[in-house]
Image (tube, rainbow, N blue to C red; front, side, top):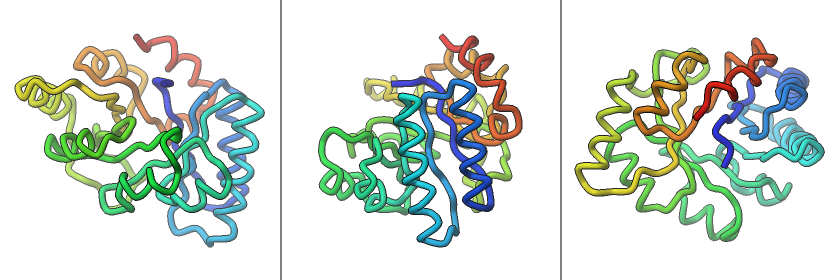
Length: 204
């Protein structure tokens, strides 16, 4: 599984598509299409375009929230928030071979996600971010450390955790040293798509 995820940004379909294209041009291999409050037909259109682009670039295409759209366009999987459809329900709709990721904010969320057998966990936020409305409590490095230690205390295997929430390139190594698998980046890559190569280089 890729260690660097790009979460798309943009207020219109054209903006979203442009940012996804730039990220792919600069070497991203995992795109999560995330466009909250989008008109449904525009969102479906964006997801179809994104899937096609990701196929051309041999990249993974994950759809945020919308399990049915992911099925219709044969995306590689979905990412589900804590209040979205259940992982179990998504698995029944999408089948065993698709990737299903889930959001978490606390140790109990992470344990719930492990029990739901999702393929990876988006854990955050690392710090305050304007990308997400209704932001969960900020974790900071200490929060990630406590969660990883909490799992070890329970003799649980550390799942594939992706840190999210205003992650910068200098955060990646300390996060991975704590036990975080990878990072999901939105704003930084949207603003500076050329930074993708640098982000990949610092990963272990």
